[in-house]
Image 1 (tube, rainbow, N blue to C red):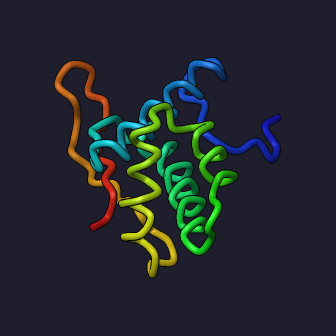
Image 2 (spheres, rainbow, N blue to C red; image 1 turned 90 degrees about the vertical axis):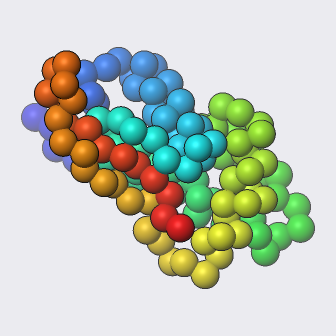
Amino acid sequence: MRHKIAGRRLKRSSGHRRALFRNLITELFRHRRITTTEAKARAVRAEAEKLITVAKRSLDKENDVHERRQVLRTVTDKEVLRELFETIAPEYKDRPGGYTRIIKLGSRQGDAAAMAILELVE
């Protein structure tokens, strides 16, 4: 039974899934928009929004080392980390949530997988 087990497994091992999510989130913050499957977009969306919330929390503080280290566990590039804290988080300072949107694209030609665009809201 799967009582109280949350999250999507996407037919991957835990290490592979963690690496996939880290890479997708890093690229989302780098390019502000990624094209992926619908299932991956839905799985990554919640984690990306939580990281933006952590970055927003550091705006009022002088020393944000703790928040940066928390986000660095997921984001794999320090340049992207800097952009998240200095550019992306201040854009959403007055927004209480809903930093991303998923736009459905239809089926992929090769395997008919449902595709979607995951992007940061302007």
